[in-house]
Length: 90
Image (cartoon, rainbow, N blue to C red; front, side, top):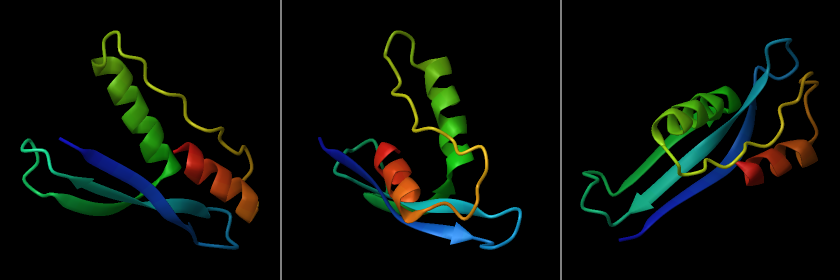
């Protein structure tokens, strides 16, 4: 069985405003019988990755959950480089 997850296509939402953020397209493809849908695609922002990490840590037992890339304290229409580095880390 194979499951592939890709994080791609970062987009800045509400650009230029104080509440701007970046969301990412999450694409999943699998041939696992455990999944009804073999492909799915959603957009999620960084804080939803933080939530997912907490849930995985709570339920993972002894399996380590990888760290997330750092959070920018001030989102100042962040540079393309920062966004790309974060995407790769996610």
